[in-house]
Length: 558
Image (cartoon, rainbow, N blue to C red; front, side):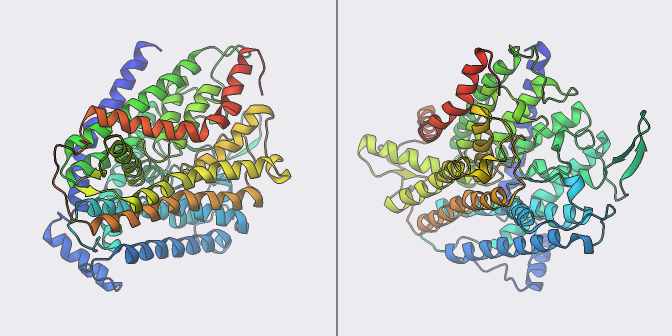
């Protein structure tokens, strides 16, 4: 690495921290209902117009039912738009409707905040589909993450109650007061950098060779802003943020990198303020930063070593951004459950690809998605305090609530279901003709392609190795299963835990209480997270990118 890389990394982390703390304080205020009275009255009347009583507080079952119903109806709406887009407006390219399996996969993908794309946007989707069907999910899926985060915080903070807030109020406030304003500002900045934002039809140009070429355009900046801030990741163009119309300058690349981690980090700050334990949130931030820096170091070291076969590490990278920015982006996007790319992960060195895989396989715990990263981390914290309780022979406690058998069981379901989905579906794909026909490389790299696809979908990330032909009924349907399990297999246990904790009385901390604001706790938490990930995925990682790395040293490539 050169000195300019160290400077850029310092600026990235510095700007991230500088913005995360005030945004975190603002987020805590919004989710706690600390909103001007005038806005509260407007909000109440708007909700009342659609039959929602903003003053009504729901128990965990009612809250969960409202959340699941909203997601189901959203999927049905998006499925209809995608399959019927040829009859809908804003379709200057006269693009046909999608097949049932691709439309279903896309609808589930965006509803679950995965944004897995088995298609190339500019040649498959109309402006209407991109804006109304997909970009709307970018807002609502992120807002749902905020909502579930708010529920688990209330469960930890409440004093023997069944009331956990109102889903419709949480959804509205997260969207209106957080996601829309920040996305609007970011979109204007991106337009200033040259990101396309237009409803004009695609342009036809003539190349120097005299060949006609279609240049796709569209309302890109508006989708790009929420795609990054909402940890969605779904690009307007097929190559995502490697496209010059979506990521035109080094500054747009820099700001997008900051945006990827900004809201997930700010939510950790908000968590500390909402539970009244800011020291604890700082320990969590330090733990996240440590994991990020270690993974980044491994990836950069691997990519900056010249490839023995090609003599370069620029394959699959954008020449505008180079190796450093490609590795930083791949590391941050897989940690944050964002899924956007500015380089092709299929061309990463084996160890850099391993880091990207392992980042996702840690679950949505280190940064993770908006809201979902923090409530996923709480599941790991519950497991950590349980382990600590076993060591000292005490009933584990967290934020003044006893962690008992039912919380441990629910937490284990939330942690293990996505992992089971990854391994089981990868095994199914590799043992069937329909699965192996789509693999473009043989040997360990082919295994990595399939493993990456189901890891990305089961952990709601959405990025891809880009070498796997996934637009088939087989992969589209299995992908739906992976994304649903990855999203709701975690969300349902978290809401149940919130309901269970809310009914418990607060316990005053004593000398025997295991402190969660110490470096010892941070070290134990990291150990639990890494060991869980390693025990689950180490064998398949060794057979995939690990073996590929060793064979590459012998001059073999795949």
